[in-house]
Length: 477
Ligand SMILES: [Zn+2]
Ligand SMILES: [Zn+2]
Image (cartoon, rainbow, N blue to C red):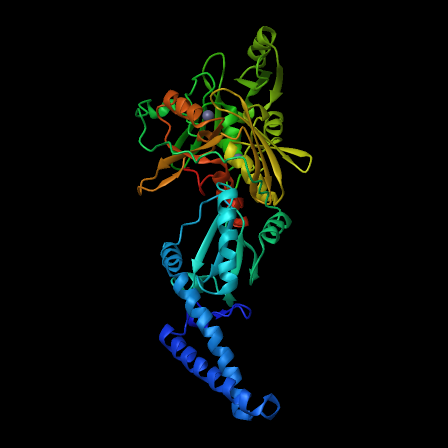
């Protein structure tokens, strides 16, 4: 870390703060006396015959005049100095999800002072969209050193993910700052007030999940229908899933070797409720009349499958054909199998992909490094929420009141971790979110701005993105 003492003021700044007022006053007094003597000498001898000593005296006198001006300025601005010094000592914490402009300067250097009203204006005009921070490196040398600056003022531009995108040394005009943000692809539109950050959270479930463990799907936490139960044999015991779709989700996010994995799976005959090895079963593949979401029923015998097909429609598929269909549509962020009917739609440069949950949908921006557009229905009402991103920040949000629910669960070590893709969502308002949480008493988590949900994804490394949502990595096995 560079020593704060090494920080030089901007060459154009003229920071005189280091000189004590008494010394300046002394210089001033000597200067006035010299000017008086000079005036007398000039009257006596004329300028042309002025001695070298008098030329030095003229320079000294000019220095004195400058010193007097500075003393007056320091006196006049001392209350402001104290105030600014105080605020600089309390360096604010970065607000997640917002781009940030940090100006490192002092309260006395001239270009630093010229920055102050600009920073104030930016703070007011872009409240909730841009975080503006001033650090007085004289009052807060450590914070200054942390940024490794060479001179003051220096302005550092951070995007919403906290990544430094640009820095500038010396005075920087407001229009140049705004133009730079635009050039960096960070959309800042002044005027419209930003939605206030949501505050709701519930970390203790309103009601304990008292369902027997056997009746809960290990993948989606949904109820298990005994007619569609899927059992995965594992070294740690049987894993019970609510149906073939949850099995394929599990299969798609396994990190272990999948050779012969299908041999560990049994499905349930829709008719008689008996276990059937996955590879020997036939599947009646239909669609829900209202949602179009696939329905899957397993059978051991073709006659039973055919009888059900005549009654309810659909097509009979072998297990490997069903697997191909299921594995064909994936989350654009975590690669999990997903039904488009359940997913957020994500548009990336005119191409479409899916997000298996709202947070994964935002993660597509992190994975691809591109600007995206997310369409995700409110989990309570189905009203559409549309998020557009630009350079990893939220460029527009419709409706503006929309918020994200960050589903969290307490791990055995007491830390709160993501409750997984089935427990996330967007809502058009914090009120809707609260109603949904009320209706789902076992859900725990907190409401966060959608900008923060995006920022959380943008700060992931490529390695972390690769491991996202994988079983054994971030999901319990
Ligand atoms: Zn399930
Ligand atoms: Zn996903």
